[in-house]
Amino acid sequence: MKLHLTGELSQVKKGLSHLLNDLDIELAKEGHRIHVTQREGPLLVKKLNGKGEIVFQDKIHFFRGLGLWLEHFYSETDFELIEKPKFTMNGAMLDASRNAVMKVDGIKDLLRKIAVMGLNTLMVYTEDTYEVKEYPYFGYMRGRYTKEELKECDQYAAELGIEMIPCIQTLAHLTEALKWNYAIDIRDTADILLAESEATYTFLDHLIEAASCPFQSKRIHIGMDEAHQLGLGKYLDKHGYQKRFDIMNKHLQEVIAITDKKKLKPMIWSDMYFRLGSKYGGYYDLDAEIPESVVASVPETQLVYWDYYHDDEEFYRTFIQKHKALKADPVFAGGVWTWNGISPNYGKAFAASEAALHACKKEGISEAFATIWGDNGAETPMVTALPVLQLFAEHTYHESFSEEHLHRRFHFCTGANFNDFMLFNQLDETPGIAKNNPQTSNPSKLLLWQDILIGLYDANIKNFPLNNHYTELTAKLEKAAERNSNWNLLFDFYKQLSHVLSVKAELGRDLKAMYDDQNRSKLQNMLPALEDVKDRVDTLRKAHRKLWFSFNKPFGWEIIEIRYGGVLARIDTVIYRLQQYIEGEISGMEELEEERLHFEGPYPMSEGSLGRNLYHRIVTAGNLS
Image (cartoon, rainbow, N blue to C red; front, side):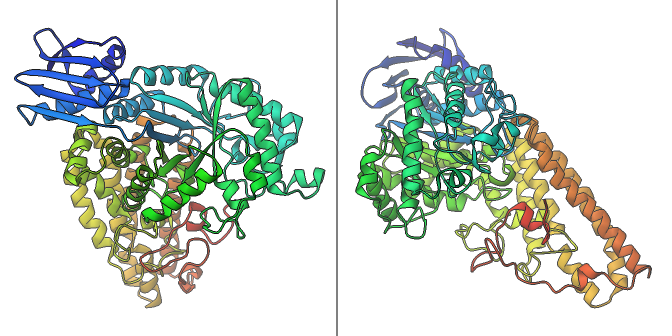
């Protein structure tokens, strides 16, 4: 489409040039006329008698407004839309620390999409994946960003009206950074820095300088969450036991002194203060009591309340109030549940986000963002976060809205069909799983990685028709792939995953049943199925590899490929062992002699769940390391 834009365009010209191709527009004098005005107040998008108008306050509002104008132009003759933003800051935090480090082009693609949505903030969470010249092993072979790469992303974002805020760690969650020998003297425990050490604060000075200097923003997220073993390692040896409240505050004061020196405005995750005030160390403990002396001594920083778990609006409101009592103007961080396994959990993400964002608006929270974590290897592609980011965007500009509105906006902003993206949910919402998967079970991960001969989750899936479920889902994903040609790599990956599970899901338990019946002829007939599933897994590996390299740097893929290699090698051994048994070389198979028990341990099976776990607890009952 050709557009003729007039008026106040100086601020948006560069950003507009980034969006021309995505929006399929061309700037030309003979195009549809839209007059652009910048002024304080709500966003106005209008077309009347052939003349268009966009009135915006902040740069980001123009890009959302342009998208709205185009969306409605295609379906309506005349229109007038007015939107009043409910949040001054709303955006996303992208995890770049758990295998997947998104390429610069991938970040730019994400920035363009969230700009059209109207989100104005992006943090890239980097524990050790940014370059610090003084420490060559910091982020070594982990895909760390160079200063130039981050600067390029930041400038691109600024042209689209998006603030990029550095997001790092300055206390815990530093296992990968601290595992090298250079860090011996600054390590308290494997993942926590040694507080009250001069060497630690020299280290942090360099980190904060390296993390902040590529960005125009003066804000910085300095982490500080989940330091559960704070003061219990080398610190204990040096200083004896000290109250963790005191250690936390002293350390934070030292870090704030560094950010003050650099004229930065820090924010921290809030959980450690609440955990330390809880009798059982819980973050979401409604009875947690933080001593007044501690409240008074909290340094000048902004608290970030992170919560992706509750679907009760009143709980969020209560906890927001508790945060306000501790420190004014807290930020809220929700989650998109990309970290559940190998597919997103949209049911949990939407339920939690809806409750949280309604509570934020009622409690006057002005800043919120959605976290896109990649726990346990970043197996789930980060772009699956887009439907939840769209939800956050619509909550920014509307008090309430319909499903139809959300679906239509998502289609315009991403070029994808909303309901087709929701099919990814069905990889984990199988028979045996409660609606919307509130227990966050991850059967697609369990069934892909679990060993066919060991079958640690076979008892959990007993009597559930999972092969049929995945066969039907594969057919749905095939049709969806045809409707979403711009997203063919993503749909091909999930279609192939479902194709694998339509055979592999029940394969181990079937082999066990045949073995228990001492039916060698049936076991013989299973050999072609094992060869078939081996081929399917390798096709899946290649589809996943192609998708990974389209968005991410190569570092980290080796972890995922090793997992695929394990599945392929073990299938080969299953065939080898079965042939030995069938041909009488061995009298029995000890792996299949073992009784299948329901999985016990972290994330055990519960009602409405088939279980949930991490890779190392799925593949073996032994010690993977």
